[in-house]
Amino acid sequence: MTEITAQSIDEALRKQLDALNTSVESREVGTVIQIGDGIARVDGLKDAMAGELLEFVGSNGQTVYGMAQNLEEDEVGAVLLGDVTAIKENDQVKTTGRIVEIPSGKEMLGRVVNPLGMPIDGKGPIKAEGMRPVEFKAPGVIQRQPVEEPMQTGILAIDSMIPIGRGQRELIIGDRQTGKTSIAVDAIINQKGKDMICIYVAIGQKASTVAGLVETLEKHGAMEYTIIVNASASDSAPLQYIAPMAGAAIGEYFMYNGENGQPATADNPGRHVLCIYDDLSKQAVAYRQMSLTLRRPPGREAYPGDIFYLHSRLLERAVKMSDEYGAGSLTALPMIETQAGDVSAYIPTNVISITDGQIFLESALFNAGNRPAVNVGLSVSRVGGAAQTKAMKKANANLRIELAQYKDMESFAQFSSDLDAETRHQLEHGKALTEMLKQPLYQPKTDAEQVVILVLASHGMLDEVPLAEQRARTAAFVRQFHADVSGTMDAITATGKLTPEQTDTILNAWKAYEGGESHGVQ
Image 1 (spheres, helix red, strand yellow):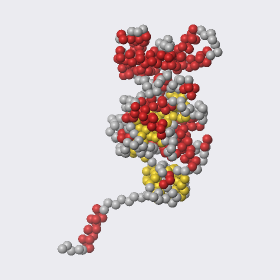
Image 2: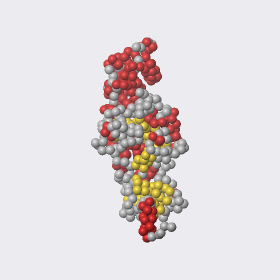
Image 3: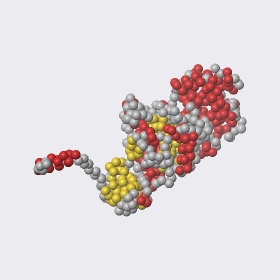
Image 4: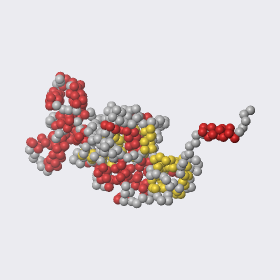
């Protein structure tokens, strides 16, 4: 029998202590002192961080998460991101030590999630690869490179005159029911096969509208590379507020990481992402509601003073990364809804000043049947010209000028019945150009198809075609031309250039087509 000595007891205790793995978790615990309207005032959280995730424990044991907003001297103002009815006064609140994060990764493709990354499409849980903070500082100047790569929407009016590049922020602005969402959906559908991940953020929309949009994308095979973040009209203001930032965070995961999930480098390129925020007007309203409830001082139109900073720090996350950081990109298409075409209101002017241009949609054009209802005169892209292909630039060199001349002449011609031949010719040419820019929903055109149509229009080939037949005849010609002379369109796509020989080939093919000799085109 082993003799028990003081030494043996000491050794045994030391062995047990060495084997014991202890870790101390330090968490602040506070108390809810006031609750109401989705806002909680909490006492006892002296070290809480701005934007920190807080854990509210209800009296029934239910856990509801919130986000710290107001860090005051004697209390913390927090917004609840879950069931507000589950929390009462005197309930416990715990800090988590981390700011609000959202799951991100390839597993989210094809799914509909809420702003917290939880699936709401009934297709089961998502096993995400990583987590991204909802709020994230945008890359600095050194980490960026100029926007030089096209991000084509497939919409002729936009790609020809208001081009968008990868990494650009292009605002879509207009009254309600003018086709803003339709442009975004067309842009998503057009990214099929182009190594682009699309994120559509729906803010304050009807659940039925979002369901219809999901159905449309599935029908066109676009959901396989698309993620939808939905904060519907029935969701709380805090969820609508964080929705665009959650969408940006999901997009950043793909931009900052390569295909293998590792950080992007020159040898491990980042992905390209298109992020659509539909729309930021509703986010601003949600933020105003949240801020007023938190008793923050109101400013112009009762919006809080940092509303500009809210949108600027969101949109500044759109970037084309330098080659050293993987050359990934995040292109932002924010939307703003105007009231009676008033672009000088507070939120529209804010966002116009932050973005790299705007696509202005007009109710009068929409009602007149010009769809997409893009006002070419008021729309501009401050970057996209650099990202436009040389073929597109050459094909539409005078398009904007010719349309502007037509608009001026059209209003002038209303007051005169006797017009000279030159004026009549210009009017007919302008009508043909306007008709050419009309485009049905969900039928995006490739870059080469757009170039072919623009070549025909710029050389006056469409002027003699009856307006009612123009779209059908040009579409049939493009199909025929691609079948008979596929090498020309393939060369335009591959090189991004348009040679005089290719222009002649297109024009001769059209003449043959119109002359009934289309099947013999060489």
